[in-house]
Length: 375
Image (cartoon, rainbow, N blue to C red; front, side, top):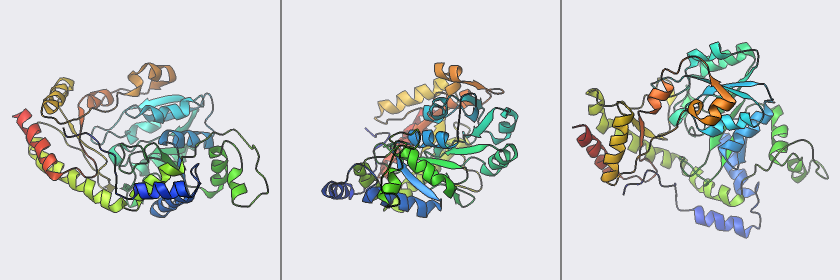
């Protein structure tokens, strides 16, 4: 069986976890948490990177820091994971979904402004498959209407837009280090903060609403409850696992990119014959080979292809069910404009196995079976 995903492992994870245990500091914000944060700050050139227990929690923190309140509206694509919406729904906001672009599966930047109302507080672009949204246009709209921008860059670690790392354009950026991501700590994430004046407030929210971080830095002689917050710190054991991969980030990137490029090369003849569609990477976008997907003609063909691959011991999966079609989607949000591409394209998309260490011979076998299916 060729698995869809195998969590990354570079070889030093056990050693670093053992070091964390031996330090008797495993609750978070220890040596490895600081090393991970420093690595992310250096590679993204952002003001502050705070590790969190998940990308979901990073987005929740961003919502709190953006003062999202009941009655506010947040614009986002419907083709995304539930966490993108949940973070704002928990603060009482209404979600406004707009259609996606069929080439990248990202929010259609040309439809955002028409969805803006006096209640709009933020835009939450999602960088699908590590391919950037058109951030120039999105930031122009946000500036014109005085809106916050919270980037869901869960899949975008090591990706760029016009030479700038994803997650660093908006007021806040959110990374995921879930086991399905390029770099993993099992469950985990990170909040990127653009403005330095927001750092202290973020630290307080992350530390259960206390100024505990300032206490440990020796800036105050005791800490106390300052505002509403929660426990968003990941375990030092998780951070130790992650740091082993961040040290080898380029190696992992190159390995995944080799698999992505081989898929693209071997399946391009089917694309050229009009049998299927392959991922698009617009000019100015540097992706991170987070996923390789193909698009079948329709839902029926995709289901048949999934079954065919399964019969040959290849595990492939479809992806998001559009949020606006879910019970909670209709309860907490609305779709602005026409759903031209969101549902149609989501029913065509099929994700192929892609992970660090995937063998070239397995990629060739997968492509061979896909070719046979279409023959």
